[in-house]
Length: 411
Ligand code: GLA
Image 1 (cartoon, protein in one colour):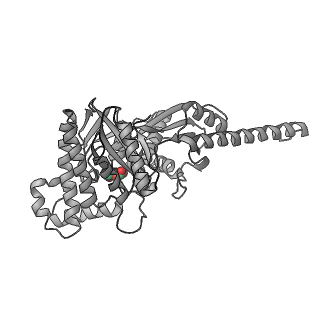
Image 2 (cartoon, rainbow, N blue to C red):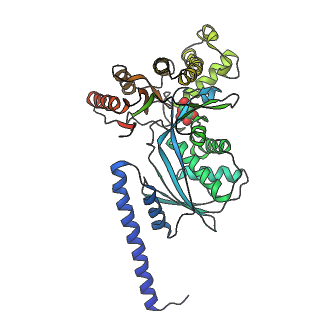
Image 3 (cartoon, rainbow, N blue to C red):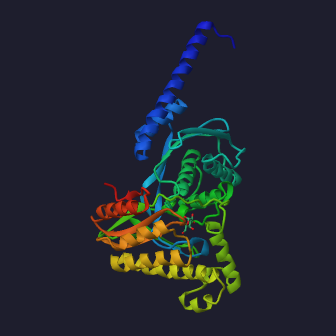
């Protein structure tokens, strides 16, 4: 196409303006995010328009989750009890006519792209989006390319499901954009397949179910054998305190050594083989003497799972009765089991739990999520959580030199 020098000049000027605007937006938001890790929705819309030159056609968001109790039970057909947290992933999306996918990640301040059908692992955080489109395409859903901007204040590696929040948000955004006939439970399954697949983390289904189905103010009881789900309201005398130790973990498949998620899963499978059961869910507390005859570490791994399932059932009853003392004792027992039998805690995490025991207004504390770092969830009397959390955070920082993050309750 021929164009006059004048129109070339104005085109050049226009491009320079667009580049300048993008740079300015990036800088403004980089500063905002480095201050408090979250971006108001209005600003996310401005980021989208700044990068893609048009408004987003839809907006979807999913909260992270804190698991109250029932840890490392999901992939053993067991019981769990998560609830949503305030921190969430928010995504704006607009479809394109071609096959190109362009994604701006606010926290990374980075725009990455790929072609549908050419998904390949190894592109950092873009793998989460690629993993979802790969699974949806495998299932025969018709997609076109799209543009996305997303922002998440669920801290990575905190045991609060930053990955599942991003995956579930992506599936739900694509469901809305392409009118895919998927229930929230199916969304969770797709998100899990994406994480197991291209992302390469062989996680269970707890996080994706919690992020897709969780409702504010409710715990979600899930039985992974029968797939029964039930909402359990959080009692009004309870306040959750969530303190991130600032030790981050990774669930990825290539972790070295034997203290990792993948090894724990394999140990459970081996324990089942030795016991002649198809799943650890087949065993009850009365089977513990038989389990104790297994060699190390299988006896203690199986013991954790069996005793944890029993604690979840008791926790549901305690929650329904607003019985914080019983619930708190179950939290401490669950933590001890994760520390001693399942061996997924760290000294810094144990310190937070010990500090919680000495703090007025706290009834129980435990490591939440996969472990090897991450966060501690504590039960506090309503109104006492912030002060107690701040006290524990200050003592932790003084003893370890590590700056923790008090994620809940908010000021
Ligand atoms: C991680 C995994 C979940 C679950 C928990 C431990 O969060 O993603 O599937 O196994 O660890 O309860």
